[in-house]
Length: 93
Image 1 (cartoon, one colour):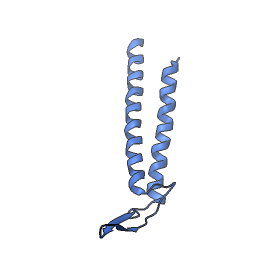
Image 2 (cartoon, rainbow, N blue to C red):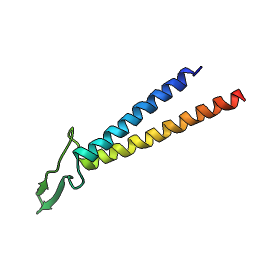
Image 3 (cartoon, rainbow, N blue to C red):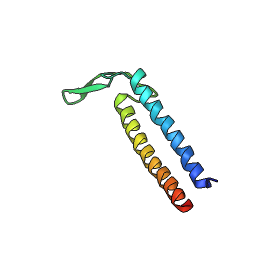
């Protein structure tokens, strides 16, 4: 029978995977490449901005940063998942 810690790790991995897929879907279908917000200064006090697409207030660059860190966290949880499974299989042998 699985320990409570293993079940929690599996659940966190499932939620993490869903978040990575969701953020990837937002970038793939909602915020197309080239939809970033661009700004450049005009003189000392003014800035000209070309507004890009946003989703939930974040542009594509911010979504890609979120996507990267979600994926990094997911990989860390999967490593823990494998270590738990490996230690359980060694204890049975």
